Image (tube, rainbow, N blue to C red; front, side, top):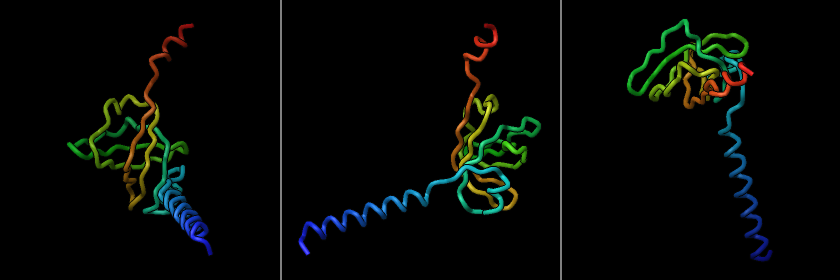
Length: 123
């Protein structure tokens, strides 16, 4: 075999390895029921903050309750500082995994109210 063929095969093998590695780290969208059926697996859950429960916040940890789109209520622990204006968010996107009765979020994204909502309502 020529050296160029060997190099091409190595490049293809490395590319396949990189693609498979990146796909295995990706999380899938789910609700809390699906996430808690597979503890430890990474999921992305969309929901909204339940204001009936208090948000507990320490310097590098906060916990709160989220209702997913199927109205399942779960406690969420986030081992980072509470995001700014978290209480005002319309919806919350959590990436993390379930363990026991708690969802441990590694990332949080928020959809905050738009400043244009009031303009659209008055027109």
